[in-house]
Length: 433
Ligand SMILES: Cc1cc2nc3c(=O)[nH]c(=O)nc-3n(C[C@H](O)[C@H](O)[C@H](O)COP(=O)(O)OP(=O)(O)OC[C@H]3O[C@@H](n4cnc5c(N)ncnc54)[C@H](O)[C@@H]3O)c2cc1C
Image (cartoon, rainbow, N blue to C red; front, side):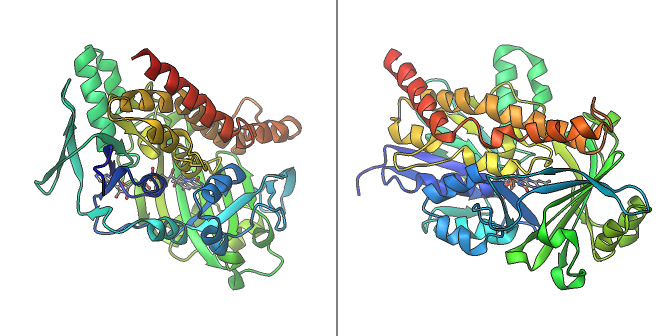
């Protein structure tokens, strides 16, 4: 076995880290190691949806058949893929004010199954558990990056991919170093995520517990009210309905949130009280969630950069966003899209040498940062629209088309064109060196 041309350490084994690991492990001359803080790869028991552009990426990774087996609503439009937007915060039956028809498809999964497809595609020997990265150092002129883990061990790599989620240690280190180097302390404000002002409750309902005519079974639903909305869609081949509800104080956006942010159980009464007086269809749905979990939804301020030298941030570590366009995981995957000749980061690294890694990362950032930040801002803005807090208020006639327009990014720009743009930029930088 020839020596690898370089070694990539991936910190974090969520969707972004595992997708990158699977994409890169196809190149025998790149060594890949995934360092995961916990004792196994895991996802929460909830749904996740992706769009056709992400589906194409998964197919190009050779994972199409495996994802097809667990997908609900494949991207052929055979199962309803529109979102029905209804006014629902009144006791009498609500009304549909807009239907977003998504010809490009919205494909739904049970999260645990979704992550497992990546886990199964991971070559053996790549994963290292109980390895929480606490810090790294890349000294000017030094070839290697030194990694420090919370269990006292150390390691080295030639490129560090920080895929360690919304509370990323990699991001903290990267922005601290950049602030020290430049003397610009304002960079420190990008380290901590901020509260969007929204609390979410989540639950799963076996489909047989709903009347067969319940709209949530056939179609993704968006039940809207003032400063609140409820999203539901079926997953697991239609056996389960996934529900996420949101309740917002828009004026609190940007503030720190002190309560535990991550999925604590709460009494069902709290959920029911929050949506008391909503249309019967919503009450019927929520009454079936016996053990809701509660989440404070955070996002990042759009970051001014995703990379520093040979360190890159991916996924929620660099663009954690409000979930109102079902985009965070898809964006994390897009970062790593590989085609026959590879795509964006994986494509760039295939062409990079040890010396040109920084150029490859700069090209990755050149293409990905504006797009990911655009989706991040749009996702937050969509939430305001669903809850009648945008400039369009309750003007249903204009609101529907504007909401639909927010999803334009699902079709444009074409990921293939983005790949070519990134490669061209990389070659330009490398030729100047
Ligand atoms: C309510 C809600 C609904 C959503 N719905 C959708 C949807 O429908 N579609 C969609 O595309 N997105 C959705 N998202 C967003 C999506 O879930 C995330 O964007 C995505 O899971 C991020 O993946 P990630 O791998 O970047 O981060 P994570 O999933 O957070 O993974 C990070 C991993 O890194 C590990 N880790 C953390 N710190 C360290 C460390 N220091 N060292 C080593 N390992 C570490 C963690 O243990 C974890 O395994 C939703 C989010 C929410 C909150």
